[in-house]
Length: 101
Image 1 (cartoon, helix red, strand yellow):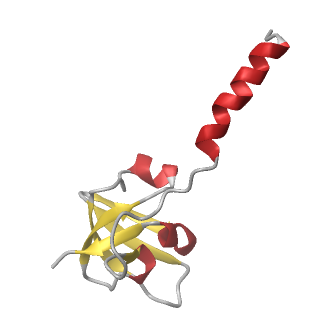
Image 2 (cartoon, helix red, strand yellow; image 1 turned 135 degrees about the vertical axis):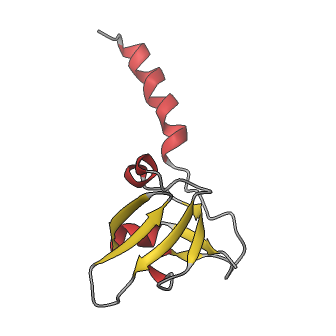
């Protein structure tokens, strides 16, 4: 059981982490969202804030290749290493990538 003075300390400690918004580290027009990646191209993940996709292997710096990206379908199919993932477009909009030449 925490005393009131310890609860107040814990409340103040947690506030410093909540308010910060991380921005994309790349310049303007250098990266775009994963759902805009053309079919058959490869890219590197620059920014990903979704914890579930990070745990699956779509972390910053990993290389992707796009298998299927039809605008009429609600999902896209990407490959990272040996694994293939079906991602919802809402999740894919949160992931920022840079196209490999």
